[in-house]
Length: 310
View 1: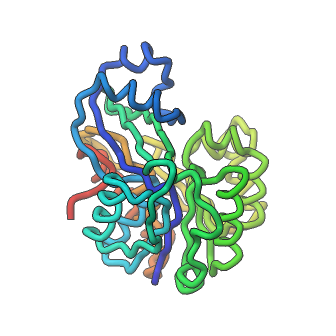
View 2: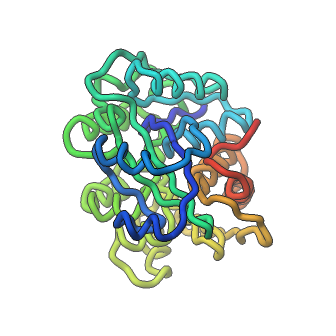
């Protein structure tokens, strides 16, 4: 298997809202907030659902890789309930091997409310459900060992069981990539993420704000210096400034696509990472890998939702 992803197995519920919905509910635009089941249901009760689709950041990347023809798998914790069923079916439909046997859990399958404002920005409200309870027992070590690259998401990292799951996966892997996921995520777990980026990961994906927050710098040049210093592959998306990859002393840039009809920015980073990894495992150059990532992300932001149609 080329790539195995481990991440939050979450069903996305996509809704369009006005800006005032964000402010009235004390949400911060373009970020992700974790809530309990009661708050999630309360918010959802006032909304019209546009679409429901199997999601989760790394799962979206893995589906993108499958659509590009790569042999991929995914591990994520769901319950044996209606949403868990839907989740598994969604992966099967996309030819992604699901290395997880679901059973009836005390907590339901996780759900993420994706609120799209008129400016196409997306604000996420997540009830992690059983996804956030992943433990080392849920990690299929054989699947990890037989994949070329293990791909993890920062969203999944937490003290306790998820941390142990991460450690087991990393210790059995051949090569590890991780996405920093979200600015709040970085702020919450800064010392742990820094330790991972410096010593455990081979490849780190981040956007400009996330990586600058992680290493406490104001200038992007300092990010380049940091990446050279730790001698790892760091791939950074910079919005309309495009993307840059720093690999040892090599700095490669790729411009953003122009004149796109942007509908929804959900999944832009996920599909970018999927496209880049596709290039990497198929022996493309860093520049070509950045271009494939950019192509994938520019396609997904022109549709609603985080997955491309096959």
